[in-house]
Image (tube, rainbow, N blue to C red; front, side):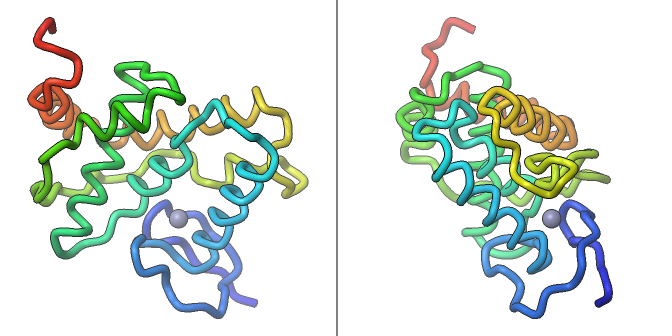
Length: 175
Ligand SMILES: [Zn+2]
């Protein structure tokens, strides 16, 4: 079985005979591993403290080139990472905060790709034995570290994303 790198995160995995995922710039094998991580998280933790971090780390690490939907998807992931990591919005407040931050805002611009998408990948959500990280604190720490790495990779867009959030008025005008 031959291996190949994911076009998004670069993770090298044995190739998988499946079509590429339609909404992510990812290899089928990487996307399958992501599916395992999400499935485990939802089954294992009723209210994962990591909230949307897996979703947004993966989405911001595997953007698609192309049309408006791809641009908007990427912008939503970056805004959500900003809210979680910079604004420290707690997981339970994320859905409503994100909804308000995006209210009426669509048709985001295309963003130039960073040179890399960070050192961590969805593989960070698994232990050395290949099993998903089962401890809730370790799971949350791993998700946060991965998300921080992806967010850091997009450093050139941090000011723009902060401006989008500020313009939304979701935090008032105090900063
Ligand atoms: Zn990948």
